[in-house]
Amino acid sequence: MNDIRLGEILAETGTITRRQLEQALAYQKEHGGLRIGQALTALGFATQRQVLQALARRLDLPLADLSQQTAEREALELVPQALAVRYHVLPLRCRGGVLSLAADDPLNYYAFEDLRQLTGLELDIQLAEPEPLLKAVQYYYADLGARRAVRTADVQPGRGAVPPPGPAAVDVRAAEDGAPAVRLLNNLLQRAITAGASDIHIEPFEDRTGVRMRIDGALIEYMQLPRTLHQPLIARIKILAGLDIAEHRLPQDGHFRAHSEEGGGVNLRVSVMPTVFGEKAVLRLLADSAAIDHAGHFGMCDAVYARFAPLLQRPNGIIYLTGPTGSGKTTTLYLILEALRRRSVNIVTIEDPVERNIDRISQTQINPVAGLTFESGLRALLRQDPDIIMVGETRDAETAAISVRAAITGHMVFSTLHTNDALGSVARLADMGVEPYMAANALAGLVAQRLLRKVCPHCGQEEPLTPEEAALLGSQVRAVRRGRGCPHCHGTGYRGRVAIHELVAVDKTLRRMISERVPAEQMAAHARQAQGMRTLREEALDLVREGVTTPEEALKILFEE
Image 1 (cartoon, helix red, strand yellow):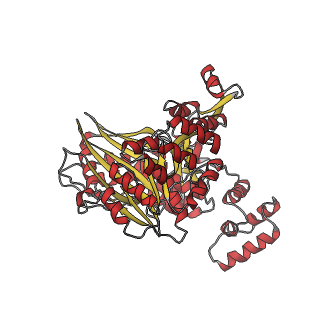
Image 2 (tube, rainbow, N blue to C red):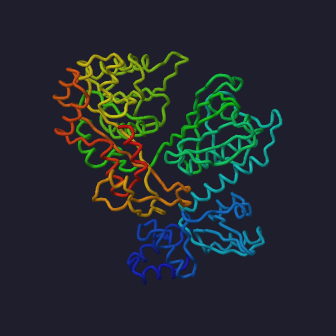
Image 3 (spheres, rainbow, N blue to C red):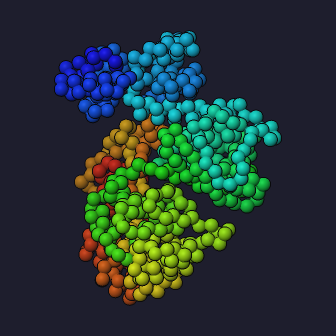
């Protein structure tokens, strides 16, 4: 990429202008060592994809679509991870004395000669964009490292030094260091982070230990471990999470933090539970920055956001987010708090656990052992001169009562509840002993949320409707989209999730209805007529009609109604 001909190619094809080429050459001289392609992308004159396409035409090389290819383990074994990272290459397959590689710099002749000498094979080069290439290198080598740790496991007593007890931080980038259990866990974490998993399940059985990962809401089989490796792996998790490694009879909860190849941080919530064949561990990954559709609108569609935004201008009141575990309630709350922190207000939270650290917000984690519960913590927070309070979860009557009183006395409160729909929060508060007139005066808004898996954009295809689907969706819908399964979606047919919401703004009429204990059906009818409220069912069916999700995903919502 160093010579001017690449720039000439881009200029001749109309990708850049002659003026832009001259500016890029000047920028290249000012920043010694830059290639002309790097100068063009740094100035925003061309994308990495456009530069690669120009190189592909010039050098007659194919462009690799890494989402549609799988790197074979035999090829990965030929190139150490350190070299793959240093030279920005990903071994794909080995056939007939030829090693196929994906690379972002086809002119790095020194690297290619080094790899030829190392492998004794000829190289077949494909071009790939730097960012997807690096992510693929992390993904495949994490898998390779985990399986290598299993093969080389030595479970002799006392093997492998471990850090002192207490919640810790682990650098998963040190995936090749330490004892087999240490390397195995590091690689499992790196693989889960790269794959976008939300949970890792480590499950003991009579003759093996299974590892599954929850990706886009579905549990996917990952690997099987020998039983001899189970206890060292659980011990490693316990030590990082600050748990008692000698206790095998009782459930334990803890947390620790991991640093990934991407440079971001991930908080891990650990739950260890005794089972018939040993202790099962579930690790919940709570990334500092998670991608979400409509992030600027708190994951809400435009219509729901337009009704929700005015609620944030209120000086007081409670907004409850409701939904089952794993429906993204806490993620939505964090998005709201990140928007509110720009104001000149004091925001305090009490959580279990603190899933993500947010600048300019005072976050407190409960500690029942020390006597810090939601109830006692919330009482203390009220003496911290708060404007906005976030309670991670309203679990008991006392927490609900304090939250209601805080809202009535001039604070804005956000919290979560476990209910099937938005107005179910009213009945839930009544069950907790909150008087209807108190709830009516405190409530500002109720939001029910669910997550639905999206059809994979790489393998999704239209299919004709079955009679049952036609009855569900209406006669105007002629087809639905389903994914066939591909490497990009781990064979599930789904990639990513989208949130749907049911929003009820508590107006004067609803306050009266709540005070008078009017049935939820009548309150829902008012919300639909006066506010244009749409139910979770309606939102889910709309996404099916648009081809965003499948009827099977929508049925998760329909069955709950």
